[in-house]
Image 1: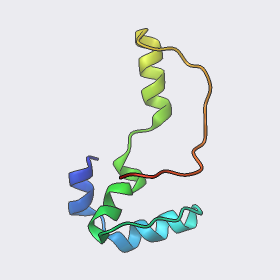
Image 2: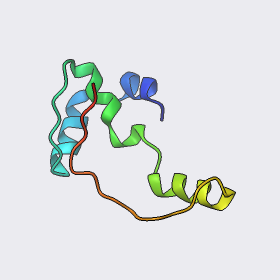
Image 3: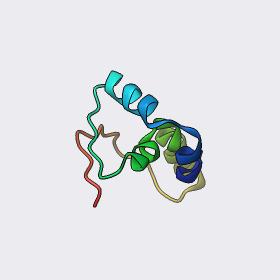
Image 4: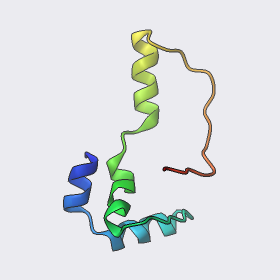
Length: 72
């Protein structure tokens, strides 16, 4: 699902609850931006990395887990 589709179809309360259950804290300037951070808005990173690796565009090295994200 694209970010624009997320804004149209997902309620910000459900996104907040979903992120809260995963232990994720989010602070944004506008509630509209919360929908863009819904997990459904993102592709599975493992699938993307596998595709690039198999196509020879890049190679796998390590898998990291983010502890914070700051967008500005």
